[in-house]
Image (cartoon, rainbow, N blue to C red; front, side, top):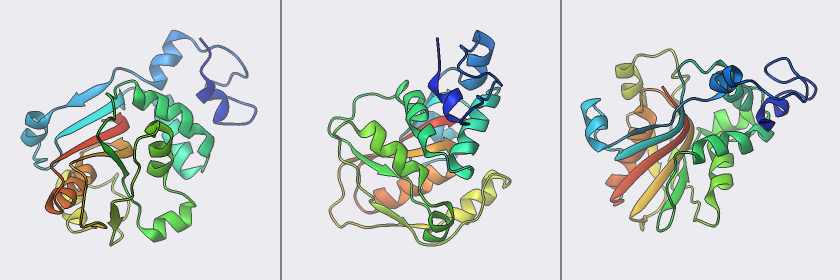
Length: 208
């Protein structure tokens, strides 16, 4: 079946090099694979003690088109891709009833240079009437995390967020585009639970 994401990435050329063409099963597998869900026990075994669950619409491994889509979304500033990335995320997302959506914040310097926060765009798309609230603020820049080891990420993120409300909701769903080690989601969850939130889930497009 057609996938609009491929034709949204570039005005006249899709990621597969085709224009207005259907993608093959092989190309579809390069775009997304199976969803990934980690429960509390699995997360704690990985040293992530504050986030209660992480859900992703796809594994990130062996999905070169998804790699390129997320990279183009954030660094190429192609906001239109958000709709299709959100659909991938929603493929592994339960009902939002009774939950508050919170996009993972960027530091203001990063948001200024990029022009938008990708997590905010995804949060608005998936909300479907649920409350979206910027409960967190990133209080210090943490640099690019991709090339850091897990221990280095955890250290860089410690104390990087603060909660903006004294009356937080009971359950919060953190939204981001990608989770690799889970360190960012876990630090956000630490901050929210310190403020009084009882349960924190993380929903992302891709995990791995």
